[in-house]
Length: 144
Image (cartoon, rainbow, N blue to C red):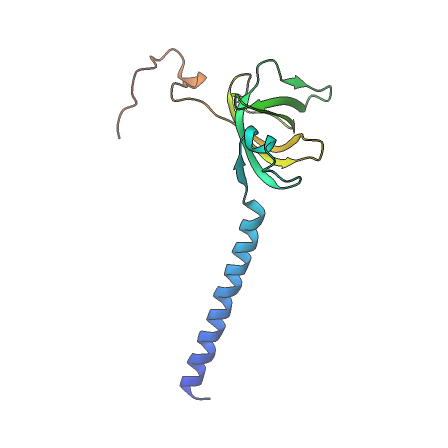
């Protein structure tokens, strides 16, 4: 076999390998891709049942209900204009609480409840971790 043919075969094998890796990467990303939705968008019908998405909003005051099993929690996510009931089974973050921001990954159920697989609690720029103790909030970290 001539060297020219060997290079051509090697180039074709490399091209097939790159194409195969691209298909695998696209397949993996398709399962992880999630649209960000607000309660207004969900109430407006922009969310399909079973579609992977992220729900962002605030936890409505007085809406947190812990179930008897100790892991399941139900609450209402709101953006001030609309509300969506949320159900989550697991341990919630320390910052999770009433009237705090949250982002939940999950899917809509046919009954209109958002079933979360993961909950992330959001905080504002004034947040100070409990480990920092009584350090003044206006004190800036030293620059490295």
